[in-house]
Length: 117
Length: 112
Image 1 (cartoon, each protein chain N blue to C red):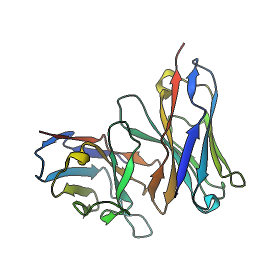
Image 2 (spheres, rainbow over the protein chains, first blue to last red):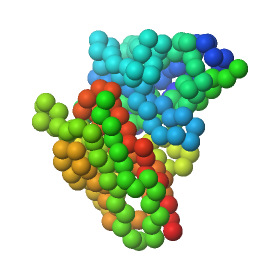
Image 3 (tube, each protein chain N blue to C red):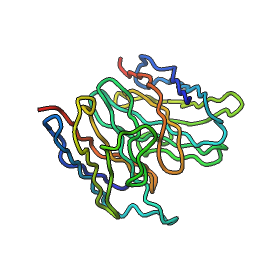
C-alpha cells in the first residue's frame, strides 16, 4: 500500500534553513505528481507547492515563493522541500501528498517545523 | 486566488442524525477540461487529512456510503447521512482547478 514518510523537521532560528524529505513507497513514484501542504498549530490547511511527475512543472504558494524549492528524485522515490529564510509564520506540520488527476488521495503523517529564536 | 468559504465552522450533531457542510468558491471551479476539481477531506484529531470525496461527488476507496458530495459551479455540499462517533473531526473542502490550490477554513464536527 501507499506509504509517505516525511522527515527533516525540527527547530530552526528565524532566517535559517531546513530540508524536508518525503520517502514514498507502494506505488510507482515517477508516475504521480506530488505536493507539500502545511498546517500551522491549531489552524487549517495551506497548500505550499506542487511538482509534476517528471519535475518539469512546479508551482508555489505566494507565501513561500522565492524562499522554498520543491524537487524530487524519481530514482530514489523521494520528494524534497528546501526551505530557506524561514520565518516564524512558517511554523507548521508539513505534509507530503500524492496527487492523482486533481485530488490528493494519500498523505504522510507530517513533520513539524518550528521557527523560533 | 480562489477563496473557499465553508459554513458552518462548527457543527454539533447528535449521533445518528445527519450533518451537512457547505463550501462556496469565489469563482467557478469548472476546469477547461470540463472537470470540477473539488474534493472533501476529513481530519480526525491528531491525524493527517484523509480524502473522502473527489470531483464533487466521487467517494474515495474505503469511504463509507453515508458520506456524499454534491454541487456544481461555485456551490458544493458534503452530507453525512447518519453521524457516527468516528466522524468527529474537521472537514475541509479543497479546489485543485487553479493554482494556487486552496482550502476552506474547515468545519469542526462534534457530537452533541
